[in-house]
Length: 348
Image (cartoon, rainbow, N blue to C red; front, side, top):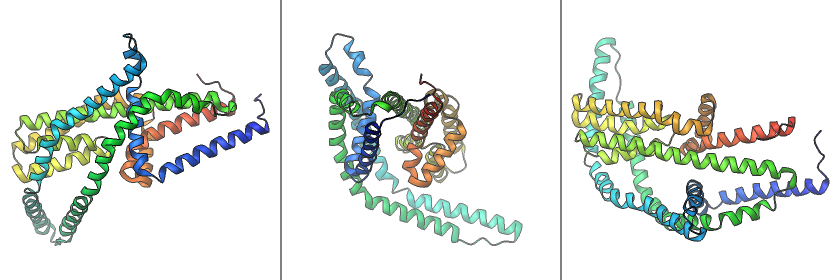
């Protein structure tokens, strides 16, 4: 029989839950701090387990934190320094190919509509193509107009994220111990278990997605380099970045390469090689990388994954699709603990 919670404990529990909700709501009001803080928190979850490993070599914790922090800076800054000039140059050159791509799309569209009209007698207008091109031009213009704003945010994050990462690694344990002191006794054990499990799953999931995206990007960039295709690094980077979006990401990452390949090489062997490369890369991801690295970490039924991605995209767009799976995993953990509490089942 479950023990009854006395009145002071209920008040303490209410204040604690209300404080958590108020804190989360407050964070949503300050995205300039919340976004870099969230990024720093995720990075710290990935690298925090490395600190005890470093300490096994007889290095004290402050020095171990400094070593891990320097390693993080190197791992993130060195690739950026190396690839940024190439990617920037390729991105600038893309604008010279846009008229060629537009001309190709119009030519292909005209040919397809002519075939439809000759076989069915139905005349397809140019509205679909024109509307699509107008939408693409408006979207591109909007993105270009937002670039200064994004650059300002990125520069701000470049300063804030490392700062937050360092202090989370340095003082994370002290903050955690201080926070646990205000957790009500009635939920302490389950709260500690849930927070530990969620942090572990979130860190492992983000790391797995990073590795997964990197593998896809490297395979595609390397393949395009071998095929001597223009914008190999940029297309590989696009494929890697879009890969973090479940299900829809591989499609979004493939479309630019398909359109560019057709406009540049036509329906020839080079385009066929590009298509095969993307198919092979995505097959490796779906058949090997995702099941081994990602799905085992979150331990979710495929149907639940699909539903969570749909709900995430419905309410929060692309960001919702990215965070939907770890949130679904958290929901599953909480649901299991509520069930255990209701039916008196002890946590493992």
